[in-house]
Image 1 (cartoon, rainbow, N blue to C red):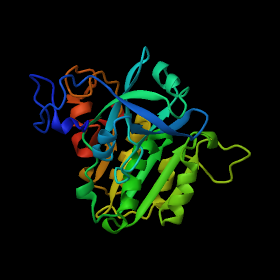
Image 2 (image 1 turned 90 degrees about the vertical axis):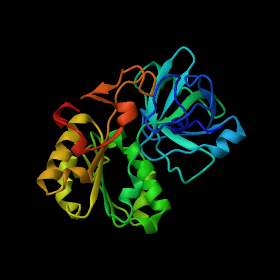
Image 3 (image 1 turned 60 degrees about the horizontal axis):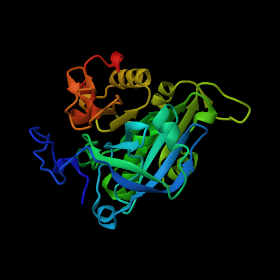
Image 4 (image 1 turned 120 degrees about the vertical axis):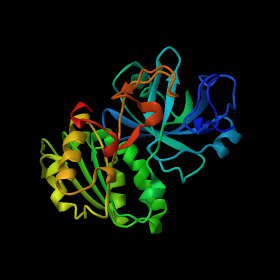
Length: 295
């Protein structure tokens, strides 16, 4: 059994890829067990999950930029992006910031506990179109999570991509996620530049907005592609600055977050700028977006 929405659709609803049902109730979550929990910072944890059903676990596939609908009894359901590379079969990772009832309940989980998941949903990053290109990643805070899925996939398929540069900004050093990954990526040849808005006694790195790192990225506007994720206001200013640097709008990609109820384009809860984020996104090129000040 594969929980791939490209292969099913609710009765009477036309799916974005003409998919057909594989189970009678597409809203019924499938159990997944917590295999490992990684603490990224005081508010953020990465959950490594595997399905209880070995067949589902073996056949499950997804693409960087997609998301799962995650649920726990009496705590509701929410969309969470993949933060792992799909090239590493047998498990998948979701990175969660503690904020509300569901995410707080998830932060109380322990290895061996079970949650409900369904998906994957959404339009991913265009990995085939990015093949052969040098890539600039610009992330803010936990916005590095969905970009981590892309970056790890690129490293798993290193010969298919050119230079890789990551610009990462956080409010404080305590907000940094994936600190161990950042060092590993550097060792694998990724050019990583990090900055914080406010330093403390532990920080000897750069201080300032992530946009201030853009001139040092070494990215060539005509040939590179840029992937951006973070708070809406950060996305707006980064995309605007990249356009000023000469990047065509269709060479810039971002992933948007919205509250969702169904994940398959039925409820309309994630409607934004005449788009359903769950079906037409969450990944968009800048050319597909209107006024980015509203992100």
